[in-house]
Image 1 (cartoon, rainbow, N blue to C red):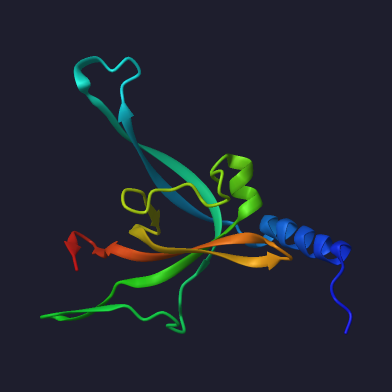
Image 2 (cartoon, helix red, strand yellow):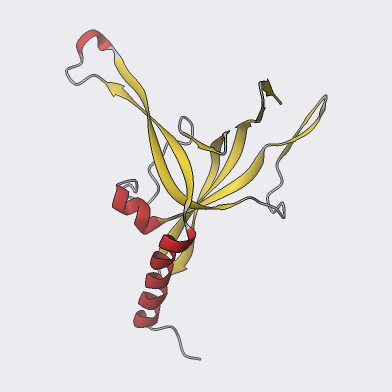
Length: 154
């Protein structure tokens, strides 16, 4: 059985990276939290701010419920996890959001995303679309922080 040559892997990599321009076009807002000491350390105060970053991604709405995560309440069951976002790793690298380990550089405890008025927090991250030994995509599984309908929160 013949294996896949390095040239064929490169063709596959090029296809995945070029597909980003066509498929990964949904806007999602990343609210990136940053903190640290002031430049000169005066007053022992820390800098605490959030940056609003608009990113392009492909969204999977989990219509087939491949990862169920529900919370039971007195008024019923709430679906707490229903969205996965797919980023092209090359795209994130070009924006400077991939760290030295090759992972998406975000803080899952403080950062969150907004899409169509919903606040979403990451509950998992994984690489995908491996080309030989290099993952080409980053998938984040997001859970709803709150569901807003009008002025009410459910």
